[in-house]
Amino acid sequence: MAKKINVNQRDKLVQLLPGYNCGICGYARCDEFAASLLRKRSQLEKCRFMFQELFDENRERAEAILKEEKIIAPEEK
Image (cartoon, rainbow, N blue to C red; front, side, top):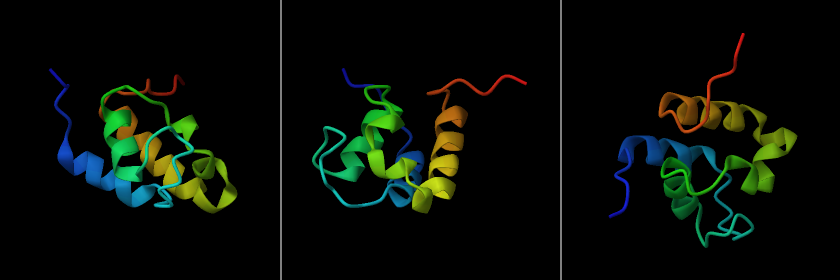
């Protein structure tokens, strides 16, 4: 059975992703990629565009969502 995801968080991630639906991450569409992130089936690093300067703020916000959902570990101080 597939892990349930927080649909609100998925929608927020979709808004932060580039929206190119390019498939470079391994998923045909950005919404599929967002769901896979929340299911721990992929990593944000798979989206090359998120690591371009244009998307720095979006990447930081996406990382915050993934930390909130305990997908990625919070940074140690």
